[in-house]
Image (cartoon, rainbow, N blue to C red; front, side, top):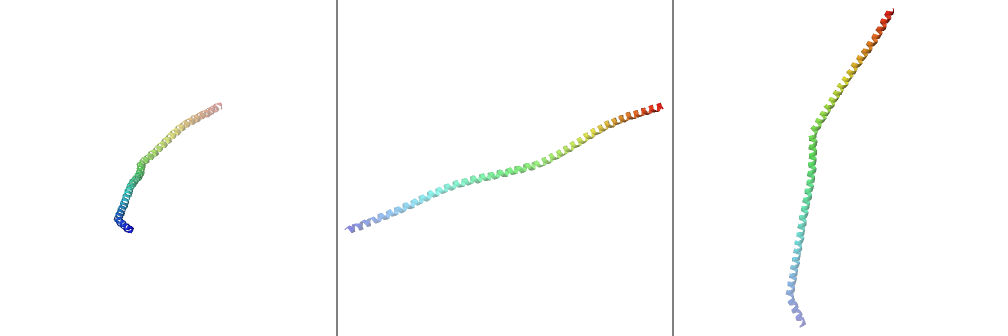
Length: 145
């Protein structure tokens, strides 16, 4: 009798056990799907954050490159614009130097000629005075004879 009861109990338990195993496998499958969904959602969120961060970084780097390029272009433009101005400045400065040299040469020559004239007049007066003295001595010497 005990064996029959045990067989009957096992027979009654079989569909319940199958249903339990089936429900457990469905639960395991649902958990796996939920974890997959959560993992995928987390991955996609992290991916979006990473993509935004990369975009900002690339934008900042591109901005930095562009500003460096712009600074270089402005420097080249400044040098290019400065070149004719600098040439003109150097040309005008050389002309001014030439004018100063000519003015100084003229002033020096004028001063020299004035001093020369003064010196020639002084020499002439001195020679005239000496010649008169000699002549007067000569006249005195002739008179005394």
